[in-house]
Picture 1 (cartoon, rainbow over the protein chains, first blue to last red):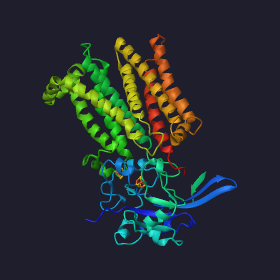
Picture 2 (picture 1 turned 90 degrees about the vertical axis):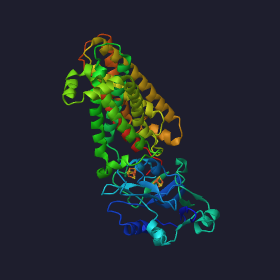
Picture 3 (picture 1 turned 60 degrees about the vertical axis):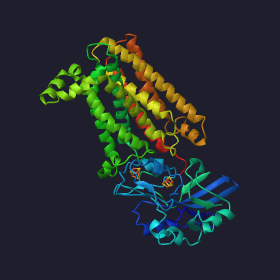
Picture 4 (picture 1 turned 180 degrees about the horizontal axis):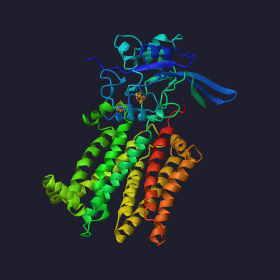
Length: 182
Length: 314
Ligand code: SF4
Ligand code: SF4
């Protein structure tokens, strides 16, 4: 069996212009119901005038290595894919109890109109075919990168080696796998 | 620092603040706690066997499956995918408090029914006669023989149930206002207090009435102490927890907490009970009614407060 993959997204905040193409691409690719988002753009302004720092971040489920959503799920509907770290929801098992939503520090999940929980899947259907997730593929500035962190030769591993980066709310202890180059 | 979402993420019940759990969950947590309280007090009374006459605590046992049933129905109403409710019982997830809870509830139901069957000959002769007519005498005899064991098991299950209703929330590291280990004990004490209030209300025996009034005064005092500890712990904790504590120290829920939870839900009933013990006349139901109302308000408050506190500010 091939070694388990640790998929990660590495997003360059220096290049992101907040255009929202990734958000649109996701909605189209995954037929996200109207009014819902699996990914979104955050505009962040920090510092005190005149030393202000501004960044755009494209955010989504972090496919955490220590996923509290999966731990909280009473039915096993939320699970980690066997071959990778991608966290998924099985609609056939989900009761809509929302324990996983309460457990996610990033508010990455929502309840679909049908009653089960849904969120970003890292476009696992595309990844299995060797394609990048739709958001990554659509980014006009090429600020988003996708790959396997268990492979030291992958583009994402190399980017994290060569550039300073951060993850969101690391104190929450979830070990997120979406990285932001800063 | 200012951060906001520019492509409008307006996921229903997630934005602008989490509102995934509403009255259904609060009502369930309250009734779950009340069940725990009634079960523990009733079972303890069985274990003591102080008097021959059936105590109100024992008589009230008959309501435990009913109260729990209504609570579970309320929880069921909260499920977004109701048709899959059986999925709780096709697996056991050791890391999920909700999974633990589902199985504890599954045990509480039959055990409380057996405890009723074992005591009803004295507490509810009418029910006993009915059961006899339906050919259920064997059930009563079975339970009567094992009454002490059943009572001990009931105390243990009641404690587990009471604590679980708090752990269910406190296990969420993602919600700083819930994420405090003391929430389990607080919910247990609050459930016991609700149970004691109901016994006090329903008791026809003056000594028992006063006893449970005194017990309830102690429980409410203890609950106030624990809530105080929780807030002190939060306010002196890491940044996120401090921000959570701010919710009741100047933040959005300050009035709600101090006026409704503390003053109306805890201080008022405890004062009424103390006055009552000191012999000031007042209608018998007033103090217990406020205790029960206070328990319900407290659940509403906690469920909302947790959802208002997060790790991310947008
Ligand atoms: S970001 Fe949230 S939903 Fe995604 S894996 Fe982490 S905890 Fe789970
Ligand atoms: S809502 Fe569904 S996926 Fe989420 S915890 Fe409940 S059963 Fe699991």
